[in-house]
Length: 230
Ligand SMILES: Nc1ncnc2c1ncn2[C@@H]1O[C@H](COP(=O)(O)OP(=O)(O)O)[C@@H](O)[C@H]1O
Ligand SMILES: [Mg+2]
Image (cartoon, rainbow, N blue to C red; front, side, top):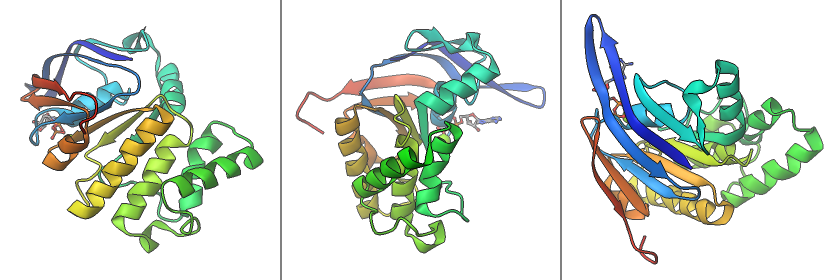
């Protein structure tokens, strides 16, 4: 479970402090499929980066499975990220000179997994995301949707407890965006991995079970659909 308690984040621009998060309280249970929604500038990326241990709050706490991450050193935080958290980005962020297979392999190399054990996992996951025939393609030989599938496989290959996706469909046409959302939904159901994604796209909210709406760094609405819908 992820819990934010009175989370604040101020950015310093010259001598001026800009409050990007102004007191966020939220609990996200394991296995949720949750959208952080809101217009550009509302604080979505800031919140995801703090949850993902990529940034630190100015005030307040984040607990991940009960551990206060502000009490972890930078090494421990890097360990937590490496083991527990998968990231998916708006611009896919694959390594251009590596094939789909090699991009997905990287997190497992960082975890010192043996080659033979890696291979079965990578192939199975690339097949699961619908890229069985694209294993040896490089990013520039794939469509945006295919690249995002590789990125999703890369995020999931280490069996993280959560995947954080910052506007994962922003660079995709609406048909492809729907396919990517359906894929994430399917993977969430199957792997029980928590998915937290940010968006300003109505489409994403249609797919999410829970939508947390941000405005100017505050939660203005937090809605969960009943089971069986969305
Ligand atoms: N590194 C930074 N330095 C200064 N201001 C920032 C920085 N990052 C974000 N901001 C500001 O904080 C606010 C929230 O940004 P962000 O979390 O990126 O919002 P969103 O992802 O919802 O578009 C915006 O007004 C943005 O300009
Ligand atoms: Mg953003």
